[in-house]
Length: 229
Image (cartoon, rainbow, N blue to C red; front, side, top):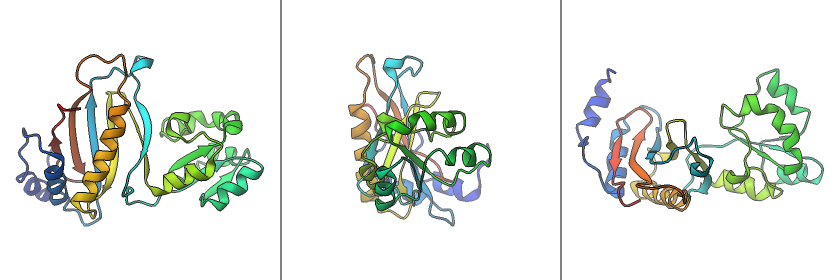
């Protein structure tokens, strides 16, 4: 893959084989973000898990101390008093069964996170084929299937991120923007790593986090010391 001039220049500051301490890695990744827009900084963790086994699935959520730097649009499926509660808590969209055709037939997807009360999961389940592949399906482990919709909305708006294994057993999570200070990025990184460490499957043998890297949207990645996790 051929990279642009800016990418190549940014890569010169990073030793490809070296694993950096988190604080230094955040300084380097900020310098590597040279695009004209405020790039997202993402953490990529290659795990030793085998997601084909149910007992080695890793999934959960954590509220980052400094948020993600992006405005998150929340859709809440609820009924009765919970609809009013969701609206009062700052949900961007609220509704019930009437939203199904809008999403299914009209392709409406102007939201980033879906929250549902447990009594609405029968309805939301009909959207599995649409929401599932996009990672938008509400899930109790991620705190998005709950009766406490106000808390769920507050956490999401405050910078809650979900982590889960992809098909290659890698976890990809945004931890902020290039405009964040290196200290803010490190504190978000530490919160994420701490949460994922606690989610280590008890059946896993050997190293849990095989490699960790941080990278801006358009720039090169920086390896972070992984053998302590």
